[in-house]
Image 1 (tube, rainbow, N blue to C red):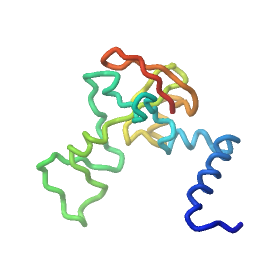
Image 2 (cartoon, rainbow, N blue to C red):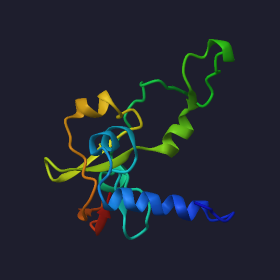
Image 3 (spheres, rainbow, N blue to C red):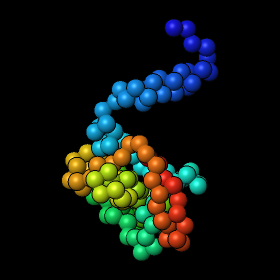
Image 4 (cartoon, rainbow, N blue to C red):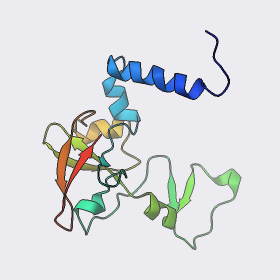
Length: 146
């Protein structure tokens, strides 16, 4: 196949379209290790956050191969860093995410830690397709999709 320069992204997207349309993927792998199940708000096209649904939501602590430092806490020297390090303000900016649990038919929060075995331990079945309605903190009903 001869591909003109500058068209390879379109070709790659075409491949992805075929893979998704024909369901030629490992759904369980996608649920455990990718961000594909994360819910997107259809009104803003931004990821749905737990704070959109619950005003007093507290971020989950991150402990799976990452260390969160306070804003003024000194970082250890590079050779003594056993895991990636982020500062608390960046962790706050990242926030947590939401998926639609097909078992309970409701949105469930996920943190960056909830991958692989930790995802399995949550006992949820994240939807990969569908359209769902959630009620935001302000009472507005919003459509969300994975």
